[in-house]
Image 1 (cartoon, rainbow, N blue to C red):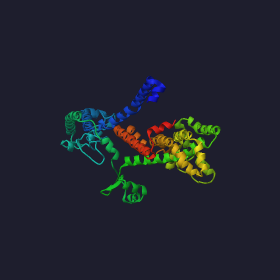
Image 2: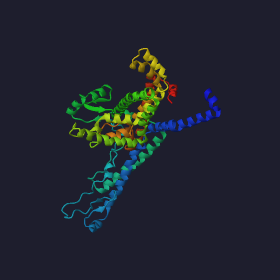
Image 3: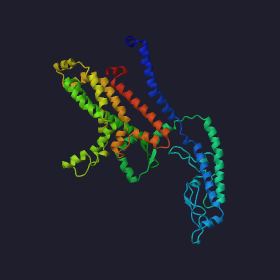
Image 4: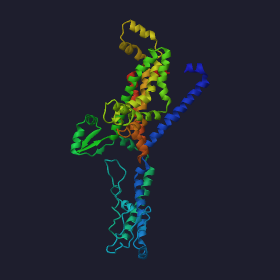
Length: 460
């Protein structure tokens, strides 16, 4: 701090820290707090009052539709037995006047969705393993609109259901207004087990797989009452983290030799050309580079075309189904985030240390293990953390490359929860939990690498 004061003065130092604080507050703290608040809040449509309100609306709509069948018989005769428009979405319904031949009487009314849903025996929003009915939870009489009774009785039943629902809705709204709005149900959905229906033969085949045995050992897959259950969200999360670690390891194995070659084993003039070869492809937008890979791995792409031209294959290889293809594209997409930090730190190493070690008889492997890698440890840590976080949050690469032919990554699950699910609050819980898990893994990695935050200052 004293060095900053001497170099920049108190005024500039204060401005710098104020700008950093505002940056962190606006881009890190407030978004995460907003995400946490949303994750701890139950969605409005999951509340019991929302279900009761839907029952009331369906019942009142049912009453309105049934009233259209109370028209005088003369209007039916005038229509000649043709369909009369109903009030339920503009669809035509049969009239009450009978069929053209007059041999049989027409049904009292056709199927009406709102009347079918106008019942006190309505399922409340609970977990998949738990089914709670409205009438049982709040001690309501079991009422429904039966098609077999006269229309007047149907209207009376629907009206009674609407009045009961309206009264209960007011009571529930008052209770929910006084209750705490926060809950852990959205986080609990992450560990929720789902039933996987399968035959006995299929279950025996699935049980024999090594991956399913591993899931059973970790509790992510289990059997109960002869049925198979899986914690799908946790399985997706664990699989994504493993895949991100593999992609990061592949990037490190690829980038460490490149960084060493450019920083320590190449004259400065040639190093410039090597860096240009790395940087120029990244002048293209990331999405364009990802879509370019689809022209390489498609069934009629460059790779399959080359293999067929060489006579090595008779039919196209489904590269889109191989997880290794996603790893390859992720490494290609984020390779610079690994190679630059390693190069920046490695370039500060005094080459005389390497020459002295060689003069003392150290092998190339020992030189790397005892001199180069310890010196480059901050760059390796920064590159590994950056690549891991980018790979763990990758969305476009697995979605575009696999095209739904591989198991989805957790980032895709979060997207589906936010934009393709009625419960976006679960998406917030998934997102916040995933962030915490990634931060814990990064902290564990820093502890294993014996690196501290101040060591990152060496990565320029």
